[in-house]
Image (tube, rainbow, N blue to C red; front, side):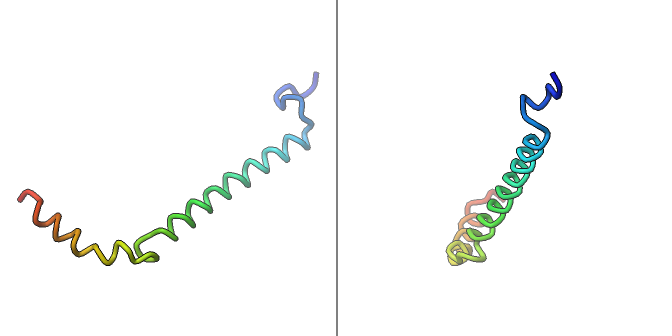
Length: 64
């Protein structure tokens, strides 16, 4: 019984599985970065229009 740690896979299959898992993780990180950058205030401009109102509200309601 050779190579018990690979759960019945050959070395090539194990390497391919590990490589695919690595590419999947890198792909998820890239998608998360893209989603974060594409929905920010600088790209959508929605929250930037209301940011002054939000700041004024918090300045008025903050405890001094």
